[in-house]
Image (spheres, rainbow, N blue to C red):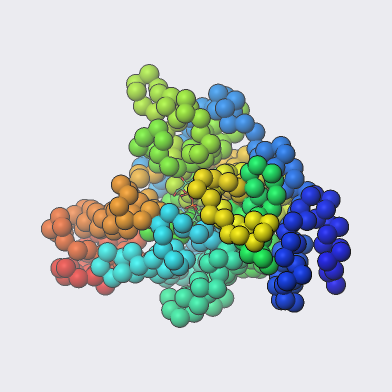
Length: 463
Ligand code: UD1
């Protein structure tokens, strides 16, 4: 059993005993909770990060050696035909699963629930979760094989996500095809002193360990075993915030397979030097992603002689992983370095007073899943059209982009384009939504219309 003395001994070695300041006043449950949190922390790592800074190398010198990455163009019809066949074969053989990350706290959106529960369908108010699940179900129906969803939550989104999906009976997904697992956490430390911060008298301040936490969470939860048991070899990875994501798109998966790649990442052309997206770059012959906050200003602004942005390739956080890479990473945690960022973190001071800092006061630690790129065999970059695949919900109403209104407008625009391409005349301002059950792409909609499997109503949700 954990005693106060054993906790003190562990903490004192790292000058962190202050987190026991209120121990004597805690009840048994409070003590057990705090003790478990303290024991789950790797204090050596926290010390090292505080003293030495982040695990990864300095981005200034790194970007000085960087080049724009070579990219496969999805729009290249000739190459894409073979890719479509290869991806379709993998789906028909039941070798593909979906990895959906939904552990973020969505603080910029200001929605007090997991972001996946946000009602975004422009006509139906379908939630992000429903849209993603229906896309997977439509792929499942088309290829006649299960496509398990491995859905990552965090302690702050887990219980509500489980209850929501239960309430909606997983939108029709069979029980053994939805594997929910919760990611781990990391503590925050005071930026000036390196001391752990208390959220409450019986709780450390802990936050999700970044989407890179997916590797250890997949392993610890048994999800990697589930993949192995089901013969799932490729994982289509995406974020919960993007309703335009072409989930399990066979052509994307096919390019990844044809390149014999262990990690393929999808990019779009950046719209400005400081676009808030990761930057896919080639450094010393290796593809990697440098996050927008880490990109030095000079690199962000660098231009080619024709005036185009040198580092043009913006990550939309859609990747295809080979299971082999996830397995290798699970056995070698060094492959995912810890990034450090300075954030505002409210905390209890030593007298028990709650402090709401006006400026960033704390260091938080996260792993980014795209840091696996250098460890991947034959990593490739695939370029797609932004308007076709990317409209992330990030900001509360009032911001210039990535707000609920902006995302709905992007969705309506896409449906409008699909209908127009299929020869259907629609008012530019018509309220339109196309269910994933009806079509997952412009081509599929066109085929259905041509075959007479679908006819157009107006102003209502399409079937
Ligand atoms: C992220 C990417 C950025 C990309 C952009 C595209 C990072 C660090 N950056 O930026 O390269 O261009 O999306 O939209 O990811 N999540 C977890 N657990 C966590 C943290 C995040 O599951 O601990 C999930 C979130 O639920 C979300 C996704 O990861 O689905 C992205 O997180 P977010 O904080 O929104 O990243 P961005 O800064 O927008």
